[in-house]
Every structure is written in structure tokens, then in C-alpha cells.
Length: 454
Image (cartoon, rainbow, N blue to C red; front, side, top):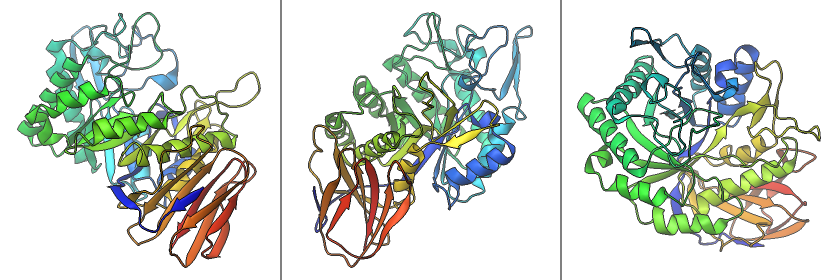
């Protein structure tokens, strides 16, 4: 592969990298919290700048169908069914909030997003935060839309009063999926496009009325195509929403082997709506076929990150959960999809190799870097991909993902110095070269490299 860096076209500006604290951070305390907060948000760790905090829908212990403790969460609102009244409880979900504050202390976070998988259980039709009893049916009755709006904004205002720099509220998450029915596994709520629009409009009206210093974010569409075009056209057509919604957030699931999907998304959606910034706010390998200790997981993750930026046009990239439960299959390998995996209460936890995929970007491509269009569409087999960025201090950073045999790479550019950081199955994130610029390099099979040139 020849990488053209002499006069590449400059694309969008990078707004950063992040992850979600959903479900797991409510159990992460003590030494585990200290170590993981540093590995994720510290300067010696990933140095992430985006933090997604889950405003949990909670659960009524007598009316709860989500069995897995890592797929539901405490809410910040206590509801008494006998009296049919509720009140906020900001001593709830305390472990998760303390973890967030630990991360904020690292000094790298500039964006906190409060997102909801479901409204509070007391606001739903079923009295459950896991969706309607009928699939593809909204679990939030219209008479409770304004209750949901007030609930989310009240929580945001409380967080802000505590010094937490909440920038965005994301009230809806993956509205197109069925969420509910006979079998449920996590919090969720389905919305039709018209319901998405009505809920967002009410949020926009109330934000403007209150003067709350937050913006709308979402609707966290569960895929790049499908219903996504309908969502953005509906939201873009509402002048009230546009006053407080600068970012369209989506998830890039279900197209891991389709760079063409990302090009269609950029050409038909991103370019058609320059009034929005586009954030890829959630991804993990789905279904996850890569064990945590295999470099394949890192290579797939790194390829998706690069393609989402360069081909898809996103301005920030956020992984799904930072930590998931150990998922040991019959072969004895752990198939957790997080950057880390852990036991339920963090008596044991370990770093997954996909952690290094994010490190190859976040540690070298700071906020304000510019994406560079210096390549054509990747090969159909996705065997070799390269993604380039120009940093604010003038360095050119290229992340190369080699998912095949040993390969030679050549550069067409004018540089004097070069550093190469490499990850292979045997050794992760080590400096393989640091010296004068070389126009060619040889990558080992199944390897990931970040090349910094100046």
C-alpha cells in the first residue's frame, strides 16, 4: 500500500474519544475505581475526553424482568406506588457518580453526556424500564412525555450544581429496536419516528424555557442507515429543536465489514446536513466473535474507528461500555465486548486487547486534529487499512491496520522524523522505531501501527 501524504484533502475536525460508564460503574469502587479511572481518562491512560453517564430507568423489585444486574441500574428517583408520588434521591447510584468524579479529576474530560436507555419505570406504560409488553411499541405514554422531560432536566441541573460539566442530554437510545415483548434483557424503549420528534421538541421547548445550559444530543440511532435518514430529516425540519441540538449522534453497529455503508452514510446523510455535527456515540463488535486476549479484537476495533472517521464522517468516536462482565465460553476464552472485563463486583478485572486499539488513536490524535482524505475505498476484504490525521501541532499521524500477512507500506510525503508504535498478538503498544523519517516500513502480520511523522 502506498499512503499519499504530500497534499491530502482536509476533512472534518476531531472532537475526541470516549466511552460509556453504563451499568458497570455502579459496582466499581476502591482500588478498581482508582486504576480504571486512570487507565481510561488519565494522561498515562487513554486520556479520553468524552464521558457517557447513564441516567438509569431504575426498577421496581416486584415488577422487574431484567435478571442480569449489569443490564439494569439504580435510578435517581424514588417512587412510592401506594402513594403514587415520587422524589429525587441524589444519594442513589452513588458509586457510579463517584467513579465519574474520579475520572473528572484527571482533567481530560470536556464533554459529559447524560443518556437514558428508558424513562424512569414509573413513567412507563408497563411500570418497567425494559420496554413495552409488545415489541416495537413505545413504553412512554404521551401523557408522561413532559414528566420525562422534567425528570431528565432536573437531574442535569442537579449535576451541574455539583460541578459536573454536563454538556448534552440524550433522552432516547436506539429508538428503532423492539425493546420489550416476551423476552427482555436490558433497559430500553422503542419510539416511532414521530414519537422521537415529539419528545425532542418538548425537550427543546423546556430547555429554552428554563435556560438550562445543556444541549440536545441524539437520537442515538442504532445503525447508520435504515431509519436514520428519517430521524435526521424530521429533527432538521423542527426549528425549535435546531436551536438546542447541534449534534446528531448515531451508532455504527451491524456494518463491520461494509466500508460502503459508511460512504453512503457520509454522502447521503452527513453531507446533506451541514447544520449538524455527527458523533459516533456507541460501537462494539456485535455479535462479538473475538476473545479479549486476541489481537483480532483490537484490529477490528481499530479498523472501525478509522473507517467511521474517514469514510463515515464522524467527528468523535465513543466505545460502548468500558467494562463488561467476563463472558467465558466453552473454549475457555473470555468474549466480553468491553475495553476491560470484570467479575460482578470487580474482585477480578483485566484489560482486553481492544483497549490498545483505542489507545492507538486517542493518545496521538488530540481534539482539534483534522481527518485527512488520502486514500481510496479500502480493499473489499478489509485486509489492509490506513487512516491519517493532522494534529494541531503539525504532526501527521497515520494508523495502519494490517489484518493479513506481513505487508510493506510506503509513504509519499516530506518529513524528517518518524515514530512507530506497534501492537501485535505477542506484544502491545510498544515503540518499534523512533528516528529519522523512512519512506517504507514492513508491518508484521495481524498488527496495528500508529506512525507519527513530522
